[in-house]
Image (cartoon, rainbow, N blue to C red; front, side, top):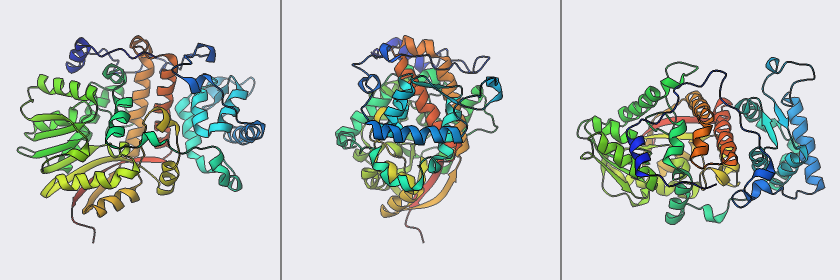
Length: 444
C-alpha cells in the first residue's frame, strides 16, 4: 500500500470542512467488504497476511475442534440449507477453512483477524458476529484448556514500548496515515472519540451534534470558561480546542502527530482563534506550566501500562491549585486488562501499537498515587457502540474514496475489522467509555 502525501489543497479542503462525505448510509445499508484472494495481496506490505503460518497438525486440530464447536453452538456457521438468508441472524462464511483454522491454531485472535484480511472468511454482519463472540468470550474455550492460553498468544514486542521516541513512532503509525482517510468516516468536526447521543439508534447526521455535546460536557466538567488556562493532552484535529477557545479559554494543546498538528492549526486559524490556541508538537511528559484545567480525551489508551504513573504525574504537575482534570477513557475489566497487557493482540499489531485499555481499578490506583482523587465517574459505553457503527457505515460507503487515497483492499478489510471489533466490544459490554473528574487530594 502506498500512502500519498497530504497536499496543501487537501489540507485546505479539510480545514474548510467541505469534504463530500455522506451524512447517511446509502439505501440498502453499508457496502460489504470486497472479495479478496491471497494471490492479490501485496506480499511486501502484508507478509503475515500472504503467509499462512505453520501451526502443526495438533494445534490446528485443536483450533478446528474448539472454534467450529463454538461457532456451531452460537449459531454463527451460516443459514441451514433452504433457509432464506434474511431469516437468520449474523453468520460467518468460510472460504478457506484450512487456512482459517491453521492461522487460529498458530496465532489465536491475531490469526482470526488476519484470516479476515486475507479474504478467507466473510460475514453477512461482521459487527454482529463479533458481538456474539465477544459476549461469550469466557465460554469459547473449556476451562481446563484455558491454562494452555500461552500456546496461542505471544508477548508484546519490545519495540512497541512508549519511550519518548517509541511513543512518537507509535502515534505516527496510526494518526499520520492520512488526514483524508480519517475524514472519509469521521463527521465534519473530525472528532475521533465517542460521541454522546440523545436518541438510539443514532442517525449519521446526528454525529456532529453528538460530538459537540460530548466535548461541551467535558469542558463543563473541567469548569472551562472565559479566561481559563486550559491544557489539552491529545489534540486530535482540534475540535475541543476550538470549542474551548470559543468560550474564551486560553488553550495549550499537545500532540505527537505532525499531520494532526498541521491541520489543527489550519482549522484554528480559519476560525479566527489562533490568538487563543497554541498547538505544540510535544509529548505529555514534556508539558510545561500550570493550568486551571486539564482535559485529555481517550489519550490514556495510547500511553501503555508502563507509563501510566508518568501520565498521571504529568497531569498532577500541570494542575494549578484548585484546578480540575476531565478525562474521557475507554475501560475494560481488570482481569481482562491484565491478560491483554501481557499479550500481543490484533489491535496492537495492526492498529494501535503500544496501546492498552486500562481498567477503572488501574485508573483509580495510578491517579491516587499521583495525588489525585476521583470526584466524578460516568460511563456511556452504548454511545460508543453507536459512534463506531456510524463510522463503520461511513467508511464502507466511501470505499472508492479510500481506494483513491491509495489504501488497498487488505487495508480496507483490516480497518473495517478494527471498527467492527471495537463496536462489538462496547455492544457486549466487554468495553466501556467513561468521563472522569479528577481533583487534588486523595480519596477519604
